[in-house]
Length: 398
Ligand code: ACO
Image 1: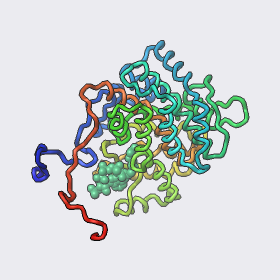
Image 2: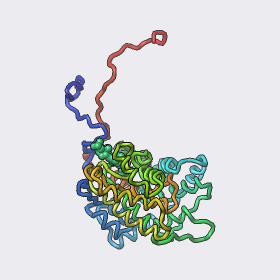
Image 3: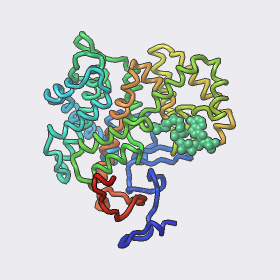
Image 4: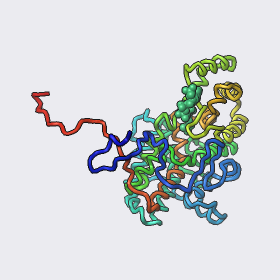
């Protein structure tokens, strides 16, 4: 009975929808999801085809511009992004000021926010050329900032970009280049990383995209809006599930312990991490693609004992009525943590990788928002449950 929440002068009826589970906050033409059928499309193209045939920057172009680029358009786009990978030396100094044990995600969030002070013109969000340049800068600098944050945690000097490498190979070089003048990661690992970026590039109105839109609706510059999105992603309910999967696999310890663990999950003792999704009530299409990437990576790095545990968990769960009847299938996080670990990333970096991949999606959502004449400042209603009209109580009477 919402009428009882009516306040004088306000409309009597409002929708009480915590977490906006059933409220559309915008119209969008970027990403389509059908959770029952397990479909994910960027601008109408199935994720499977993009992961098979595209590069990450091609997908970024598609998300931001609505169409796949021609050869010339792609070459110009890649060239422009490549020319903006460096960050101002003062930003490097800013990052060096963090504690030695600073969380890389916290460093990333702060440095992206700091970018707004380096590019004050970024607040001209109605000038398409200015907007375009900030988008390029943001996509180009994310791997540099992510790699600096990683090197910081290791106590190693930051490595500058190598612009003769591809976007993803350059990121890996900034992470792992030691003293040798050129570092080039194995092509299969570069492609696996690239595919992971593509899979994470957008997922319509998730918590971080919603944060970017909410902040962007005030017409602030994009760096401030994206920094807010990174903040939302930092939370364990959004970006942290793959780390929880790894911890679970370590705890199970051996394939022989899998049946007992599954019985514990069915008894309600705990959840099978990496299974189930609010939207997907079918196999998460991204999980299928990651499974394939897992094979390629383990071919290079050697099989990790936890992979066998994960495979056994999946095999048993997919045949068990508890999981089948609740439509619980592996989600994107079930295998991604294993992959990141095989690529030698510490768990704190997992969300940073997610953020780099998600940046084109956040920017596409932001660009769509600022060009949408129907959008208003995000300002949900509340249902007030507190006191009214009280008289101030002097200190000596409380
Ligand atoms: N293991 C065991 N049982 C589960 C699991 C799971 N992973 N997920 C849901 N269930 C059960 C619930 O206990 C419930 O059973 P009941 O009807 O007998 O009470 C039923 O399935 C429905 O669960 P809800 O919590 O209502 O489903 P919801 O859609 O709200 O939750 C969520 C989705 C949070 C992802 C959930 O499946 C979960 O906790 N999964 C594990 C964590 C995880 O992998 N998160 C990553 C999601 S992907 C991403 O964010 C990028």
